[in-house]
Image 1 (spheres, rainbow, N blue to C red):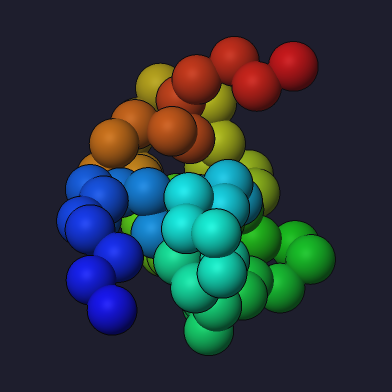
Image 2: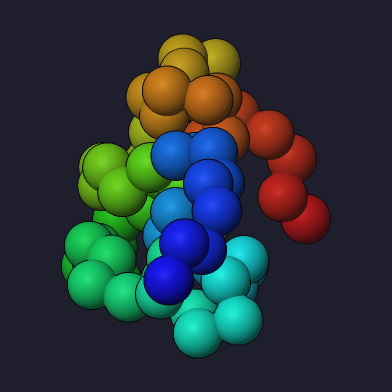
Length: 65
């Protein structure tokens, strides 16, 4: 079955893009004291909103409140 294609950045982004939710399966997990980039990288929470982009898409420097 051809599911179609989604952008790689949609995988493990917390939103289920396929009806079977397969794009959110086997995603890497970070420790509670780490920030998780949408692409799966983990880094120390102290580096969030510090003026330096740590996630490839800059997600760690966006106001998430």
